Image (spheres, rainbow, N blue to C red):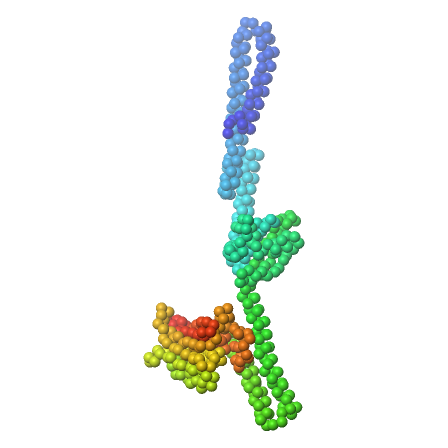
Length: 480
């Protein structure tokens, strides 16, 4: 900084000007007087006057540099320290060289730096703490300005916004900074009414619970914050619950009505012959058995889904099991004009599982074959096929139940393992409970296997069950 631009420089120039003015005034009045009174030595007096002026100016300059050392330099140090703090060096200190006002200013500046460092440290801690909380949240959090521009979002929010922009792109807008299309109406309602709005949004195949609340600054609305939670699974489970209640009510209503009607007929002596009485009693008995099977299947399914299914897991050879199931259904299939063929690997031990529950597996294949027979027209064939597979994950046994029935529509295939789901909503009432495939799925999962289905309309359906020879749980126990 130039000397004449500093406080000391300005003070020095002021003093010099004042001294010069004083000396000039003195010279105007004293020089004539000196010439008149000191005629003989006036030159010596004038020289003395000039020397005094030089000494005065020299003392003024010395005084200016003294002030520069005492005032300007500490102030410049304070300025440099302030610049360092501006750049984030909050630990910058100023040396205290005196106890006067400059020293007190330096002491106050150092104290301010310490307080500022502590405040910034606390703010950074709170910021990191808030960022950590938002980052660990499974919900998406997005903040908007009053004009709809996005201010900030947590990682889940950024992912969700990117997915929504791909599903529902907006034209003519800054896609990276504007509110996505599904949230526009909710945002408009929050800004217009200035109150919290809670709703559910269906975007694509997902369901999202949205809570959006207004944000205020000094009493003025400055935007909104939205919290979005993926409730697709909850919505699906709620729908399953409602469907389950409706289906159970439907499945129980018909046998109960038949039980009530036929029992009233017996009580009112409407039937007259013993044959009719036996027929009505047989219907009542069959419907009671159906209700018993439904209740038992529901109990079994509930235990499976609750994880309380206990398997009597022992080494099991599937060959005699499949032969027994084949014999059990062969006569029933012939009555319906359907042929069942068994194609099993005949090699010794090829179909042996080291850990399986034979009774539960028989229940699996019984349900699959019963389902195949009921949906295969007369004159067609059902093939029960079993073979050993060798793969990277270890040996396994594949069992297929292939029928030549009407097939399952492609849109229904993903849901056939759900309880009471019926691909053909208009088909005649069958003797099944609607829980067979759900039980199959849970029993196969309990054996650490997989079950899949492929079907084409008019060409039949094939259910494929793959069971590991050595389950993963048994492999872990052996390694231990």
